[in-house]
Amino acid sequence: MEIDETTYKESTRLDTAGFIASFICAIHCAITPLVLASLPLAGIKFIASDWFDFLMISLSFVIASISLYRGYIQYHRRLHALVLVVIGFAFISIGEWGHTHYTIVLTVSGALTVATSHIVNHFLTRNSLRNAA
Image (tube, rainbow, N blue to C red):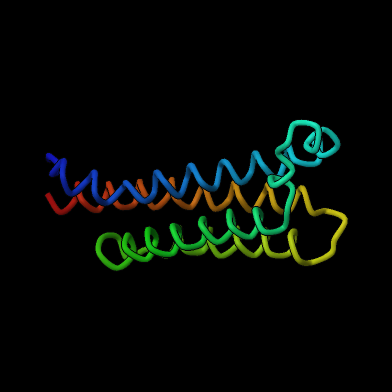
């Protein structure tokens, strides 16, 4: 069975953006502590700021909310991706604002879990569109 290419591209565009944003967030969380000392010399100390973290988390949250809600409501009606994104943002929140010694592990794990939720949503949407065709 064939999938309508236009519908497929529209349904996965946000998942792609969400995956990229989450993956960048994971890289940022993993690398920032390693290069923190050299950031002022390079003139890019904004990357280590709290507002940049909040901006990246907010951007990822908005994209994930729209994408996964749309995938769930319009296409697959399966909770797998939604459960993953809730777990991912819980890890990120605890890592960022929980004052724990495991900040890096929690935030990177959370960001990768959010990225995984976009992959799961993508495949659930694709399978739903295939079954509908």
